[in-house]
Image (cartoon, rainbow, N blue to C red; front, top):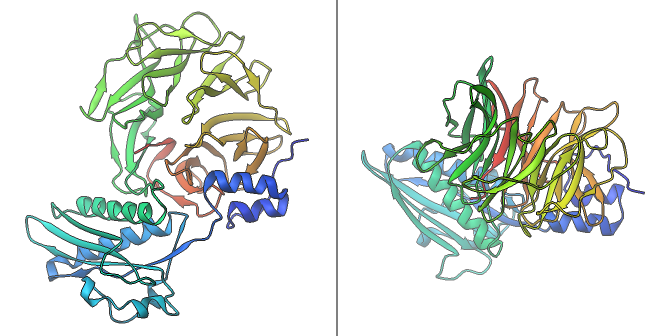
Length: 448
């Protein structure tokens, strides 16, 4: 019989949590699928040296952003700056590897560099060296030149962190340069689509519909965001699917249909969209169409409400969705053409909503309100039917979305009092609050 995991150790990795509650085989499945719980490479990042007083602020900003990115990667261990040698290199000739590989720094790799700045340009030189196997060749060597703005310096810092993580993990994806779309409400009856960097910086509004926008979903190439909006169809305002173009910076035309149309989802190749609609009757069925959506085709045929489709990003052949055809909202799987529908049986009653596939297509994250409980986040391995509980006694937690690295999740939570956007590692540890102003919900992580 399926057993749910109920552990209080929120600060441990998946392997530790499961070891206390499950068999070794279940522990290994989750750990391998998320890439967490493995031995971490220890990295030090020296303060980047400003070449002038004008460069001091941006040198400090660049250093701190790279450190934050590395620390939150989930697969690298960042040595504390308090352990660093007193002599800090700013160019390769100043690096003394033994000082960095010895205790207490005990680093495998050291990142360092310098920053110069004028009124028109910032110039950043950045390196990463293997201090346990010194050679004349850096593992990473980059020069960044651009506008001397905080936004540009932050971008270069994210780029450098991504490069480090890619080199040290054999090409695994990173998230420092990704974005998160979400919904913000700053006044009653108005919800707009916003976007921010993965770490909560650079929050800015995209839509100005002065209405209600919900459930944003990035296209696989990051060029568009499909979402639920409220717009007129033949004189009647109802829920419709809307489309925002990141390239054009505006909402673009998308067909409208009768009834209620919600929860769009993209196919992994970006050529199709699936959404929930009651266009043909009282029941909300799932429909699929190409990106022009001139001829949507129903692929579910069941009484009740069918919503929140989620395409398996790895195979493109399986779709998870929510249906109350059995009485209460539960998770179902089906083939992308609507055949082979099967309910995912849970070990307890309650409502199950918000399915989201991990990038490798092996795990499902979802929100589950068990009897006498609040909504909490879980991960399931549909093959073994093992479940890991990620949140517990921390408000209401919903709408999980995976980062493209498969090691992080973004979600909405009321744990701080109001509904806000949070991220965490995929084992439930290292939770970070990203938003603080207004009411924020329905986050979706970009794939790039």
